[in-house]
Length: 106
Image 1 (spheres, rainbow, N blue to C red):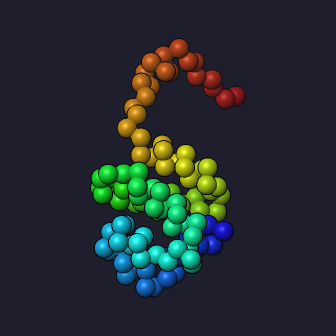
Image 2: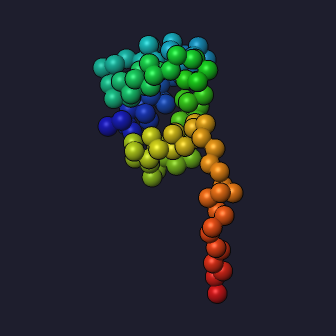
Image 3: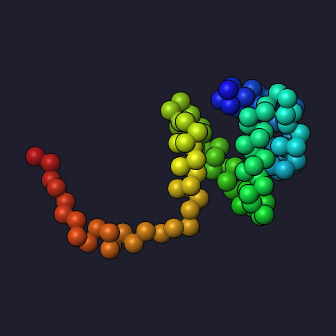
């Protein structure tokens, strides 16, 4: 259901014109009765962030993730991809790979 809502939302010319006004203005204008799943998820996501910059950055990342991998993504995949794309965590690759051996293919 949410995939169809996203497609319909993407094609809505009236809402497209509101994108430039920012995510808060845009999602307030989205009719709940027409896009209940997508709007609920978006508002939950917006409420998680106190910074407009962080929120806009996450939506931008979400847009790129959804476009690149649209046909194979589940909601779980999107959630995991967003977590990886927006994390501040920097793994210590030197330490992780220190005791690993490369295996050559024959």
